[in-house]
Length: 254
Image 1: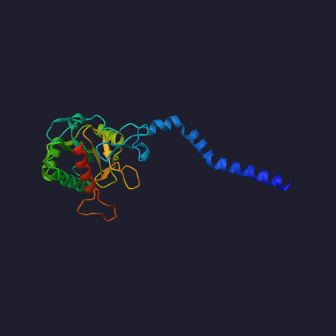
Image 2: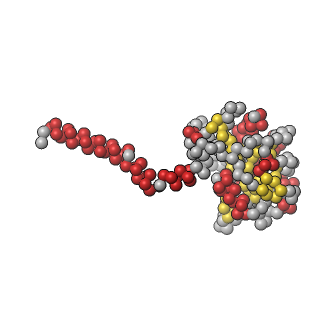
Image 3: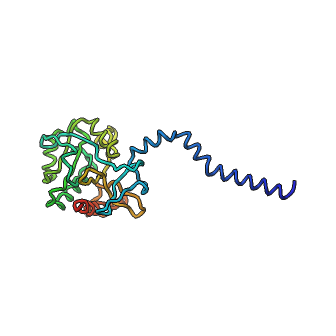
């Protein structure tokens, strides 16, 4: 066999190799994942891809959008607050507010989260268009009366800070599907429940907003556990309360 023929075979083999590396995994991926179904699932997810961020004309905070480019909005909800009043998502329209999921007997992260919430509340004590939505994940225990005592003990004074209770499955669906803030009952963990320690920032029209990180992706949620005074926790995780205050102020001006 001639050298020319050898070069031809080498060239063909190289092309086949490149094709295999680039295209075969994509083909397998499409077949195994059934793209239509996968896109339906992704369209419900909050994305961290900067391609799907939408900037605001009024500030540098972005709208969190899904893979279809649709702005992620707070789902409809209706619960009972610490005063026995029915509160819905529509009651928050026209206000900038934070969302958290907690429970009053939480022995771990909830006290830290709500001390930070109090700090934020006091920072914006003169803002009539700022509120907080706190949803209990243990509604069997956290009745309106229990929530009222809890609010009084922590120093809740903002009239737009509603600590809400209701049907547990509805609350869990709101957390896990509406906000993608993890919530679950687990008897094996301290306190009997697991949940996210993050806060969601909502604008006056009910859309989830956030700043963009140095990597170019949206922050999406803000760490609600580490205090501004701490700076960083024992694991080196930095506080985000200070930047959350900055971003609330920006939305209040929109």
